[in-house]
Image (tube, rainbow over all chains, first blue to last red):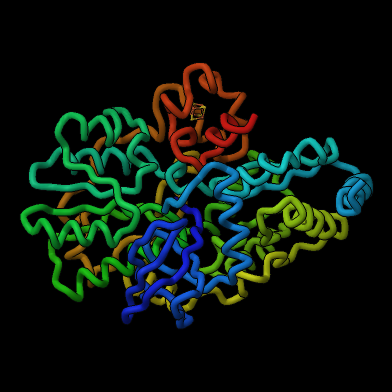
Length: 75
Length: 351
Ligand code: SF4
């Protein structure tokens, strides 16, 4: 549950966003995020909250790690 | 030989005594197995797993409290899935659910808040576990509940902070730790400053590192260089995601909701100032105000499980008599086997 999950931002509505985690759509809160994000950006998702903006490269590296240790998208 | 590995071997020869480094994060534990790193390291260099799995360090007293709430009519317990199967004296939340208690697995405290909005007739209790990274998410949901007047949303907090636990581990003198490997992205909230006290007051090098083999080697190397030279500093070998300051906004929200308190950890016992409790101004959402904690003492773990020793780095999981034969991920006897980040689960999966 401590894992940081990479997510891609699809839509932004104020402090809420629709995001995609390994192809699954979910909503996420942007309440704790310091940066502003736009559709197409990656964020580090933890327990339903975006905590930080991520580069695409960081997101891919983390996704590969999670896949390899057999832990899919979880919180 | 890889030049990093070569330098690691040279430094170990120069240090001339055994060195133990502790990785604090469960994701590191898994990454170390995945890369097969242990087999490549010099004999005297050991990597220990620390108390970085939130489910694992949650004391059975908290579980019993949650079970008592679950047994109260008109309540709904919302919890991260990992907590569900942790076995306590009186069974697990999963067995409670099987016998009629309202227990729901959520991915986010916001899911628990949504359940509270949906079921005004129930008192919805979210089990808040986790460290500095997770506590702000609970705080965010709680503030939203307060703002929107969702009075039936309550939090039972077992949130914890790491620095005092590391200090307790070192001062116990039970296990020798020469330096720490700190998790890369889990430090996004706190920033690397959180480790300053480890270096300054405890005189241990703390290296923030990533999860790839090269990154882990770079982290180990940075720690060994400091040990060889008698230095103790915070080195950030993972600068891309973690900054010195971290996420100030998330920390402000955390502090708006929580204040430090003494807390008990599985394996480490009572550690002053290591817990987070809800501030009096938000007591209306504090589950402890409505459901008092069990008054009888609760042992930290049951049935011969040695999670506590594993969490302190005193034994490795294969040294637990229950490991693999009695205790498996399908039939976990302790929290360290339940959680995917638990050290016992990692050893089971990879060794
Ligand atoms: S192997 Fe199982 S019983 Fe032994 S310490 Fe780990 S979780 Fe506890």
